[in-house]
Image (tube, one colour):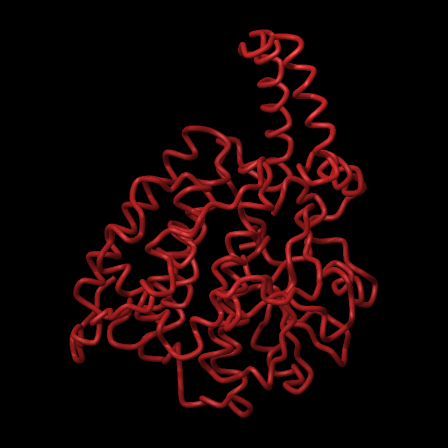
Length: 408
């Protein structure tokens, strides 16, 4: 989440301290603002450039200055990463657990008529909920507010008209339609007794009770799949049929730690050993998945399941973000012919493409994850991720394997 969820939770900026709360969040926010290269700071940059030219002309800065700046930046990076991406003693990223869960008991007590979904477009964990909501036809039953990542990594609400032609038919950031709050943290704080934890997406909100129902993405998509059939436009669609649940669970036990969270373990690794372990697991798993998808249309055979939804939201971000920003550089996704065809297959399902705002995804990573991209420059969309390519024929229908046993 984005922060369950780090860029999101399954979480998002140098000062992601604000996602966790704490007395230092205001200081860190001001520090990030001072460090940002916005228009207001450019006169200072020009002054710095003028002074450096006077000091050493076109030569490189003195070695002492370079080593001092490098040491200072390394210390600051360690500080920011420790707040943004907690790690264990080996430097390996450890994702915090979600605090609000849906249980069989709590599900029975939910009012199906008063629910509101909060998401952020960059977050792959929130993206899961948007896809299942769309596939099940729950758009009218579950209204959604789409938050934007602020410069300090917290989630904010602001009206953002489509800035690019590519965004005109996509979901875009919005105001808070349920509570009129300016930030997601304000929404969490509407709970009785307030809230001191991480304000993460996705989050399912009970409008009548003014309380958080759930901020664990998998609980939400299971609930959307089977708990709202009386209000769904596609109640016959079951993304977790009893006959496939064992296989779905087996795939999730592989995909979540090694791919969904695996890309974050690469990007947020704070030691070479942690990175090497994570990247090797990631690509050995992708190799295995590509081989499997050469025989079967979806992970569990001929039917799309929740396991496919969970894998898709990582895959759609892979060449856009993870390959470059998270150092997942061994291969691009487009180099996996079966996985890329599978990606196009799901992307082309009705209403799925609308949930994939590629520019919004890239902005949420490249412009917000300051420790990984200090300049905040967003690269161009890779050619393999352009809509024309994602909309090209995939011919996955030929992989019909009805009656075959699928082994994970």
